[in-house]
Amino acid sequence: MSMMVASLASGSSGNSYYIQGPEGAVLVDAGLSGRRLVENIVAAGGDPGLVKGIIVTHDHHDHVSGAGVLQRKHNWKLWMTKGTYAAASHKLGKVTVDTVSGETGLLAAGLTFHFTPTPHDAAEPIMVAVERDGHRCGIFTDLGHVFPGLGEWLDSLDLVFLESNYDPDMLARNRRYPHPLKARIRGQHGHLSNTEAAELIRDLPGDRLRRVVLSHLSKENNTPDVARNSFTRIVADRMKACGMLVGVAPRDTAMRLFQVTAF
Image (cartoon, one colour):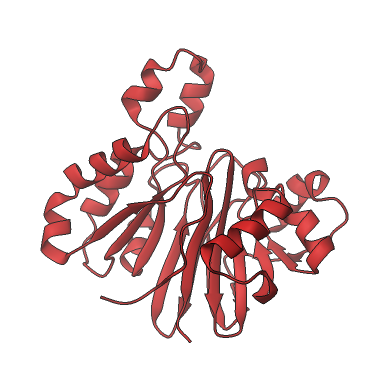
């Protein structure tokens, strides 16, 4: 069986991704209520009964809030770094955690998961790449900034859910956000802007990556149309040359499950 993926929710209110392999499925993050996550799995065309566990990328509420409840109700495994567990333990309640690191990786549901640290402002955050039969998908959000090696990771993928958090002009004009919060978002430990995400893809040396799903959009400082238009303007030549497809992950609802393929 090939690898199937879907975003269940992607934004500052909650994040989760469903990845299905030949021996079950795994969630990356669980930032919604347990009940809603199960509903969104079904809405995506997945099966909650196939889920083996949840990889939690970092300790922020919009990535971890439903994880403890889901383990206690469904007996799903929880995988996260030691730093994430230490920082998130009070949000998880009574759980059993298997710790992971960039050195160990993970085999689950017939899928191979690889982890890499990110400079986001969390305790010990990671991004996730998963592969099956040579096909590779990345969940690359909450990245902090464009750090060394990120381009090489992207160049190894067929599909990526890539952070495109904010439009710089919308953030600058937002009177509801105090200056320290704006500085945190734009800073080295915050989020990638639409422009940064697009330029990162535009400048990749290879042409393996053919499908990009813009993800983790800010409700206050971005819109799907703004993010997509920024990307297609900056990456137009690459999209035309290699047939790259671009989509936007919904903030609050599930995408339909689709197959990860090499183009």
